[in-house]
Image 1 (spheres, one colour):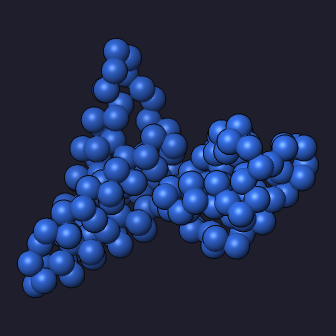
Image 2 (image 1 turned 180 degrees about the vertical axis):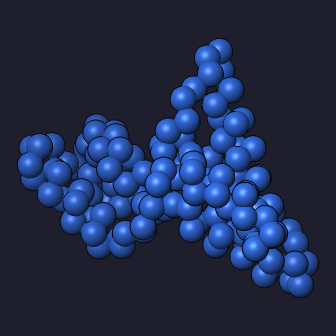
Length: 147
């Protein structure tokens, strides 16, 4: 089942899980916003949906910092529900191993900033939605610059 279909199923399941349906509706709004931004309407793909879910999660995490303690748990539960739509997450060790293998296979010269861009392009395509973007950036820099 495509990720978008999972979001739509959660919305339809409003009686069984009202709070989950509310989160799914907010995610759907983010998806719609991404499909109509710019001059052309974009096709709904898993990549676009993953981006929308990640945007939603980022916004909610930023909101949590300013909430009173009694409301934080509910918002963090929303984040966890939104994460349930994402593909299975992989570990930092698996990501690092894949980056090192890509460097070896492609012959990228590490130790210079150009390697970061090449590795980041590979990493975004390979790990979109499967690993935290900020952590991915740190791993890419570490591998590209031999740290």
